[in-house]
Amino acid sequence: MVLINGHIGDHGAAIVDARGELALESGVESDCQPLGGLIAAMLAACPDIRCMRDATRGGVVTVLSEFAQASRCAIRLQEDALPVRDAVRGVCELLGLDPLYLANEGKIVAIVAPEHAEAVLAAMRTHPAGRDSRAIGTVREAPKGTVVLATHFGGDRRVDMLFGDQLPRIC
Image 1: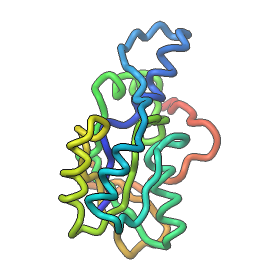
Image 2: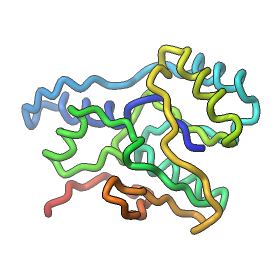
Image 3: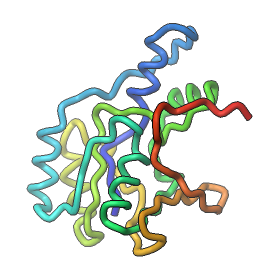
């Protein structure tokens, strides 16, 4: 199972807003926070966590792409399970950005065996940095090295690692 400790894209949206170039005043705050205590709680619940990493540069999809490529597995994300605040979604829609690629400064993405997922989620939710933890996807055998997003429209969309800076969509 793919787990995350809360809403994605807060830091990236907060930085765009703080620059003041667009006068967005979205009210989004950075998610910058220490994660050591949360990680300790996760490892106490399951010392056999497969892998974990902070989702900073390149966002959640870039981290998961690195996991999928390194382990030669496939990761399937559920779009409806991805926690994105309305204000972050608004900034992204206005600027043509994708929250899956926005920077995070207080988010951990972890891969946990399905039989340990509930115990790890319960442990995560006891920590202030993990109150909004949830499962956002699964690990599969194929297609190897890929991340696929199961959209809320019922389709699948392959999402690739971010190279360079995210460029706004123009159409």
